[in-house]
Amino acid sequence: MALIRFNYADVPPISLSRKKLIKDHIREIFLKEGKQLRSLSFIFCSDQYLIEINKTFLKHDFYTDIITFDLSEGEETVGEIYISVERVKENAVDHSSSFTDELLRVIFHGALHLCGYRDKKKSEITTMREKEDYYLQTFQKKTS
Image (cartoon, rainbow, N blue to C red):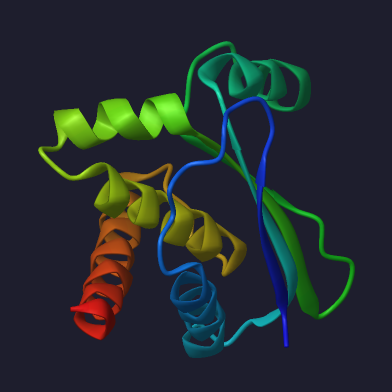
């Protein structure tokens, strides 16, 4: 079974209920998208922590909610996903969403990047949003 971890860099642990169900759903995303998952680490952090990663590794000097690194060397996916808790909180307000729903959306978004989905062009953004919505809705149905 693929190893999925939730870690915290410079923020206190967030209340993330149903961790086992979330991890199972992430595994299901990879299965449905035809990708093999070996290990995945989610690292929750602050804006400052993430902007330093953005500057150092991607040469971008702006805030973002998520950065995904594909560390795979073979068929099985290995990844690290950094998520700014501050950005997720702000996005939840901006999109009139709950923090939990927005956090799940971002978690699934990172998994989808590792499955090969991009979000630079308008058509890619549309597809990514449809996939996020689908996986968020299927998770919510499981937990309601």
